[in-house]
Amino acid sequence: IVMRVEGDTVRPVPRATRLGWVHGMVQGADGAVWVAADSGAFRHDDDSLRVVVPTASLSQYAKGTPSAVLALAPGMDGEMWLGTNGGLARVADDALEHFTEIDGLPERRIGAMLVDQAGDLWLGTGGWNLGGNGVARYLGNEITTFAEAEGLSSKVVGAIGQGADGDIWIGTAVGVDRLNGNRIRAVQDLGRTKGPKSIVRDRRGDLWLGARGVFRCRGHECQQFLEGDRS
Image (cartoon, rainbow, N blue to C red):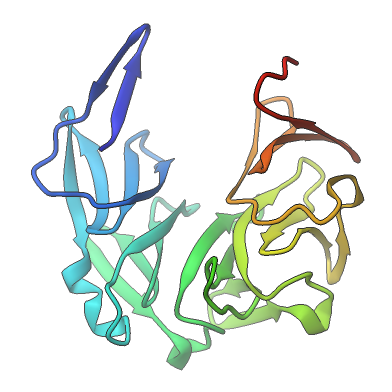
């Protein structure tokens, strides 16, 4: 179920198709909200959810596993990128393109994505309790992968964000890393925080990480908030 909050009112958004698990939501370039779910990618139009990419159109790439849309990232030119169990997909002008290992991806399961300030697409591979192959920067025909050999704390990636200074923050199965250029280092203030599933930057430039509790990172300092804490 997807809920809409309007003032003090919370109500479900009508939909014609069963969603299954909802994995994420983003706002597209035109202001419309997109939803990533087990049954596909949905767009909020006219106060209801419309399926744009059903998982049936992706199942041939999922190697026999149930296909699902796991992550979304709006592109710089109005397109929407989809991370799925069966690779990467691009939706533009109602046309669907699909990319897998044949196209150079390091792994089919794309569970986290980010389009950075320069327009580069970042892909986090794998998922909790599943294998992965690190994080990849996708530049058209060029793909650069960063994994444990390059200093990443784990090859399983669950979240990607970008700081105000341009650094890429990567949440892995065992910690949080920070990528500057080609240099990766652990975010020390978080210790070995396991499994961040979201990294979001607010209007002030602070980064918020959803893990065990919530972390707010401002500059080089991070503060953890647990249940009952007040900021």
